[in-house]
Length: 506
Image (cartoon, rainbow, N blue to C red):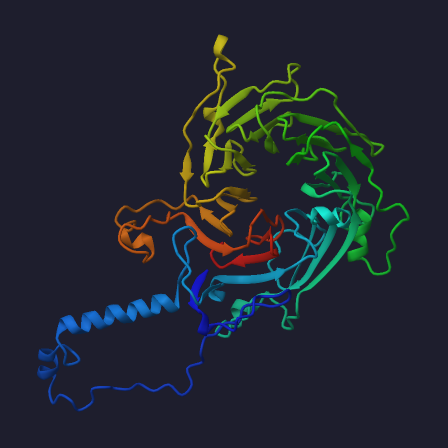
């Protein structure tokens, strides 16, 4: 993000279908001009006068003033450190994006999930298409307007770059068009706290169609509803398709929770092809729900107990089908084995003095777990250090050290996710109105990581971690996900709507 004087901006925020314009001049009508022509007759006189005829101190003072003017007009904005002055506003730097699109919905959608499609993996061509599901958060007085939204975003084009060579755009279609947002909706009776989608492993009867897709929605009224949204996805992708009469009816409504919750995760389909769902609530309870071949779901009556406060996040292990982890407002992360009859955690780790809001288990390196907390810190943990102690102290709460820890954000971490194919790349969103991208493979160079790491914020400014690659502005950012089929592409949601972007750095 860059911070500019208001006179440099047109004052209009980005709308759906708009892209930031690259304001680079083509250089026409520019001439080199010598302000001191003929003032000195020889090079010796010029050198004696200090290049432009003025004392060194005077020239250095003017250079400092000029540098300050440039900083005021346009400079990097660092959340929690930079301050917007009167007349300044934030503007994205288009030179740092390969793709950037923003869009809004009737009500904020503070949780969403990306749907895998049939358009192929490792897609790099433009324009691009993606599918997603999201749940709305309507105002309390209008709660009946809440919806489960099925989204199709198409014609997502690469940003215009006048200086790009033909070879750099070979993979792109010539005729870029405005982005298109299409949606279908299912009425919900309450606000969506969290939504996650699941695709069983059974092959589709028609390989050209999007695979069967189920959604689980954790509602503010404490219910969990499961829908089959496959017909809606086919309606968006197949001309002439019509919805069956009962398409909007949930295939299951689970009522085992007594309070609302935010933690929700499907087990990998390879482990439980019919679907197995874990859900946590604000009372600290975790329930398991099992799908059947007939397409029905039933919830266990006995919860997993161990947390003393709200369960904020649940994640199944990517490598062990009977293991999951949970994060809680009690500041702990616990690891569980569903085969245990006691339904108590196998490992109990205290990692923060504040709420642990979010968590992500690396699918590339299964012993790495990333967490984010209410104090703005996020860290990476090596689960090989979390082995339970033997003997009478086997249930003792552990306090290991993080492999890496960052306190760059000064407000709560609201979402965190590992790159699906790179165990060094992590995406983070925070209540400080930013989404940040990190590269953990970057090593600190003590010589380079000096005062200049403060990015011109003044003497004594807190250094910016060299692992920080990118800052993207998102108002009241809540959730971010990497697209598993388009390398480096991210989707993020917040109070002002959705953003889909890809940076030039990843």
